[in-house]
Amino acid sequence: MIYDAEFECISRGELEILQLKRLREVANRLYENVPFSKKKFDDAGIKPDDIKNIGDLKNLPFTYKEDLRDNYPFGLFTVPMDDIVRIHASSGTTGKPTVVGYTQNDIYTWSGLMARTLASAGVTKSDIIHNAYGYGLFTGGLGFHYGAETLGASVIPISGGNTKRQIMIMQDFGPTVLTCTPSYALHLSEVAEDLGADFKKMKLKVGVFGAEPWSNKMREEIENKLNLDAIDLYGLSEIIGPGVSSECIEAKDGLHIFEDHFIPEIIDPDTEEVLPYGEKGELVFTTITKQALPLIRYRTKDISVLNPEPCKCGRTHVRMERVSGRTDDMLIIRGVNVFPSQIESVLLNIEKVEPHYQLIVEREGALDILKVNVEVNESVFSDEIKGLQKLEKDIELEIKDLLGVNVTIKLVEPKTIQRSEGKAVRVIDNRKI
Ligand code: DLL
Image (cartoon, rainbow, N blue to C red; front, side):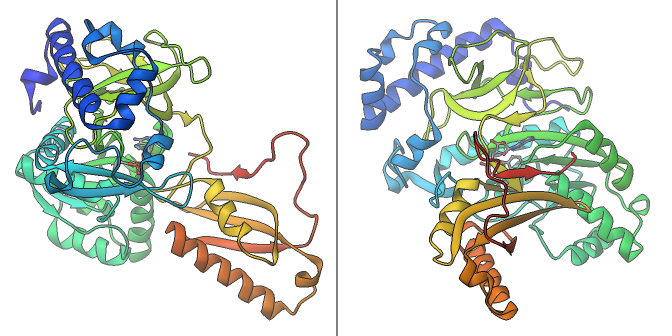
């Protein structure tokens, strides 16, 4: 079903006119309300009124995650705090999160886009949605929740965790739609198996999965194990949260980007040059309807390809291929974004450990496990085993407190972590997805 045919099936010509009008409004809004953005425009020698056609977008300055960090927490908001009704956040490259804000109107926009996303997965108001994305600062839980209500579906706000109880609720309440990360979907299937619960006897027909990379192979596995159609959706907090792009159930072949709200570009991350459709590069988005925190040419660091071919579902918006990787070293562990540099900064604050460490990511069953091997100095290593175990637990707690992620710390002998002559290999990712 197409939720918003007027905009989702708009002709390319009309779309460009709409995008240009909205882009000019956003550029003016930033220029007039955010000193940081005005300076960026001035430094680039450009004024919002210089935007005469949509091709002029490429002359505007980029926005980076660091810009949000440098203006932490609310410095890039274009409206006074009185007009902000919601705040979310995701991990940044340092200990500080990236903070995003929404006006009431932004919440309407976002809810509409999430209703669109659900509709493109074939969900209707008759469905019951088991929403196992985390509720809280993460945009997943509340993003889906509001979208489900806007569509008129019934939503079970189960959030993440307590998996056995989730299986019971799925059996008893009969949800027809499952929303969670793809790895959690697989975990649910394992726990169900242990409990002797059978997905073939449940009513689930579709799952809307995203927030972390996954592959078509993993899609097949999920579809077989959970007995449903699995749909990919993509988004990031800075741009709005989930609801930036979504697959359609008709084709399941690329994610339609909601171009009446976000203008995508693919660039070469090194030269920063815009690449033509069909070439692989870094995704860059410009938000053209958001009020509180509009961003121009935001560098996502996600790697994808844009496909302008018409789709059999009738939507005219370009499709992006599944995100195939990132240009930086960000890891996503059970939906939580983790940068090796964050782990490093915790370790470096602990006296007894050396600055030599390695992160090992594994998938045990369906769950991501992050192990950290850390060298300690000779005197610590010759301590009693009890002391070493306590230190391991202390570091684990510290990381959990600061970054919200569970890790397993293993203290290792001095000089056992391989030294490298070039870039240190800090991360070994053994997950096969
Ligand atoms: O993960 C928003 C979201 C919530 C998307 C629920 C989908 C479902 P952040 O926490 O800011 O926001 O993380 C954004 O996650 O830059 C990608 O690297 C990655 N990501 C999100 N969706 C996908 C996907 C949410 N479908 C970062 N495939 C992004 C691959 C994804 N990676």
